[in-house]
Length: 81
Image 1 (cartoon, rainbow, N blue to C red):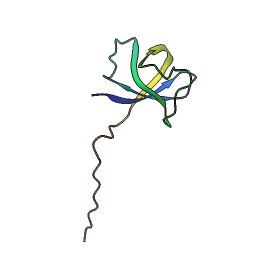
Image 2: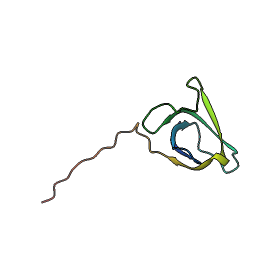
Image 3: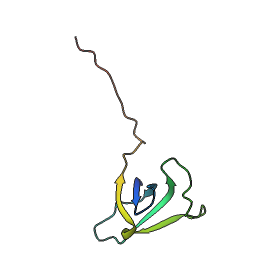
C-alpha cells in the first residue's frame, strides 16, 4: 500500500509524493515516486523522466502523511426532534 506524503524540504517548497512504506528511525533516505508540487505541477529541479527520487534526511524538515482518498467518507445528517 502506497502512502501519500507531503515532504517539507529545507529552503524549498513542499512537494507531494508516494512512498511504499513509512520511514523507520534507522532510515537515512526517503525513497519517493510520483513527485509533484502541491498543485500537481512538475517539480522544476527533478527530471520528468525520473521514476524514483531518493531524498536524504538532512534535506527534509518534516514529513506529513496524508489520509487516503480511496475510501469515500460517508457523511449523513440526522435530524433530531
